[in-house]
Length: 126
Image 1 (cartoon, rainbow, N blue to C red):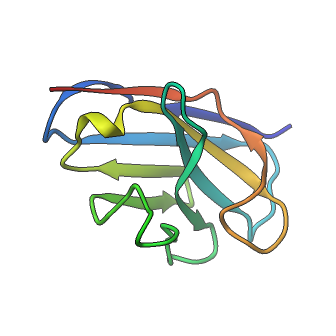
Image 2: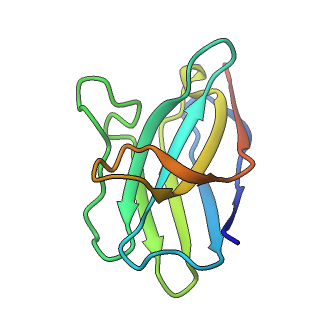
């Protein structure tokens, strides 16, 4: 059974940085991807970033709409089966529950995904 455990969230100040971690366990496809999504109160869930285990090429979605906007970086540790989301210059609009997901269905790395972690809360205070 595939499980994802997300951690690293917390309460920070504007301009601070955080590193989120997502540990993946269980049998997954070698060419699968891991993605980060976020959902703010009252808003729909949105894609943040994704990366494949076999490729070191991250994907942040449409540059015009991406919440990453050059501030976030996704990276993976294949040995530890862990994916990180480094977030810099945080602002209150980044306040959300951040979820990691794997088990990509189809070819589009933005999803949909089959397996989801429990989420980790990020709160940016002004």
